[in-house]
Length: 213
Length: 211
Image 1 (cartoon, one colour):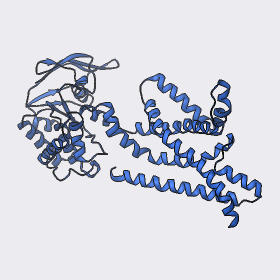
Image 2 (cartoon, rainbow over the protein chains, first blue to last red; image 1 turned 60 degrees about the vertical axis):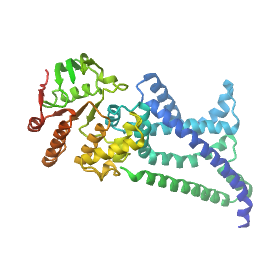
Image 3 (cartoon, chains in turn cyan, red; image 1 turned 180 degrees about the horizontal axis):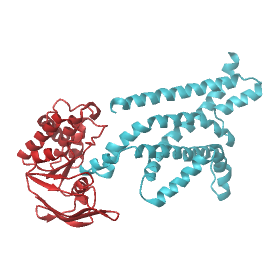
């Protein structure tokens, strides 16, 4: 117990980094994902083509590699990020691609008839999107978004590769120093707590949207 | 009064509508009948502006108009779709009042009062707070009619209104259409149900498949 209270402060400070990456990625990547997802459903070919290449790159290479490229690679062409900014940039780029694919699927699940119905009622495109399409898409995509959100909690541990001190790294340091698995056990428990909170929040949101079918 | 002059519509190289001429008199019911594939629904889609025409002209009260771009004038054509296409995320009341408040800029109070009145008229007075999934097929159709009526259309179009209904409900929608005519609403009904068409029609247009 004494040992636990000794290493807990460093683990909690690591958790702070994990949460910071997590929240900022969610807050920025979800709205961006909606926009990019909308872009994928337009009839303007050059745009969909460009987005498809972007999504292919982001989903086709490991996030770890992307982190390395953003932090160590981009300076070669003169773009220098601080460690934290580099991590956030890579995470947002990567997660936006996944979210965009999910939103594209959701958008395409809305029957053409809903758009036509809105059109004969003379609603504008924006009104149709806001009042009819987006609410239906949100309900459809919520379970898949939930999956990604939980993945993100754990993926955030990849930031160690560019030298940021997150939860896993804090555990790793303690383990190497004290030659015991206890810190890693604690790390596991903290990750479980974090994902449990996410699960509960997501379930609540799904329930919130269950008033219509 | 709506007039169609020489309306022609092609898909690829195939002519679906060939030089259609017709006049819909105010306050009357026009039925468009014909076998599947004859272009009935396509004609309805052209009239309601959901499909463009390749040639021909639409005249509303003697003035040329383009249904496909009638957003900003008040030459409104209401449509009741075959599968209704109610908005599942909105209550019956919200389905009805959405366009009047957002497009016609009615106040929420006015829109609600009118929705209330129209819903009562079609026997849906107690359904205003339900969601579409909680309604039967016939009720959904009536909500779709109310939703279209709330926009004060000069013309109300129906695509196959009886296709999903059993005989009792078929009689019911027949009564509704006739009642609306008696109130002065001009209606176009596309159907392959000839007895139904004959029962309600003031005018009838037969379309045949083109080869």
